[in-house]
Length: 314
Picture 1 (cartoon, rainbow, N blue to C red):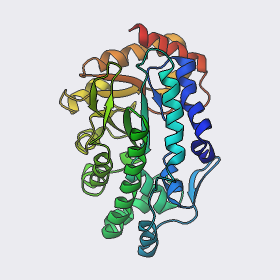
Picture 2: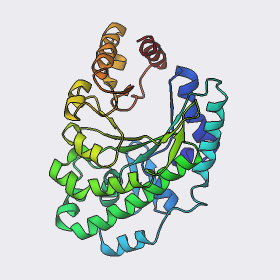
Picture 3: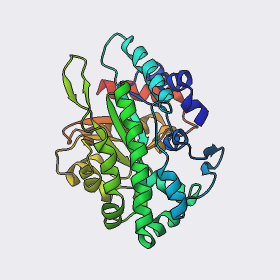
C-alpha cells in the first residue's frame, strides 16, 4: 500500500481511474494517512488485515524528542510532487478544463492515535490517556504531527492540487471539550500551512484554496472542526445534511454523505437514498456529493457509475 502511494506513476494511475471510469467531477489524491510518517523517516507499514503498524509505539519523552528531529524535506516530498504533476497534466488533457484535484492528509489526532497505540485501536485509550494524563507529551506529539501534515498538504497544493481535505478518522471518539482543548489547535496549525495559498478556477479566476475538514462520528464536533480553519465541512453518513447545515448555521458548504451500506441495496432503494441526500444538501449554500465514508471493497463499480449519472441528472 505505501509503495503504491510513493510510486508517482502508480499513485497517479490509481487517482485517475475513478475520474476516467465514473466521470466524477474531481479527483482525490490517492494517499494514506500514514504516508507523511513514512516520508519523515518513521518506521511504519500497513499490514494486510490489520492496518498501520509502527515499529514502536510512541509513549515516552525520549521518543518524542527523536520525532521532533524529523521533518519532511524537499527531497522526501519529491514523489508527492511528481505524482500530482502527472495527475494534473492528465486532468488538463480532459478538455473541459474544470476537473480539479483534491489533496488529502490525515489529521493530527488520527495520526497520533496510531502512533501512541502502535497499531489500530477500537477505543484509542492509549491516545486519550496520554492526552489527559501526560498533556505536555501529548501537546508535543500533536505539534509534530501538525507540522508534517501541514508540510504534506502544502506540497500538494504547490504542486497543483486545487483543494485540500483533512481527514480525522478517529476524532468521533472524543468529547467536544477534549477535542477543543487537545486536538483543535493542532488541526488549526495544519490549515494554517495552506491558508495563504491560492488556486485558479477554469475561467482563470484566483481563489483561496478550499479547506475541507472531515471526520467520522463527528456530528457533535462539526462547529469546532469548522472553527479550526476549514472553509467546507465533510459530513459522514450519520448526520443528515439538512441537520448538519442547521448545526453550522446555514453558511458552510457541505460534502457528503451517501451511506456506503446502500451501495449493495437494490437500485430503487439506492436511488431514493441518493435523491434524499441531494435534496437535503440543497439546504446548504454549496454541496459536494460523495459518500459518507469509503467505498466498500465488495461494491460493484457499475453501481458507482450509475450513481454518478443519477447525481449529474439532478
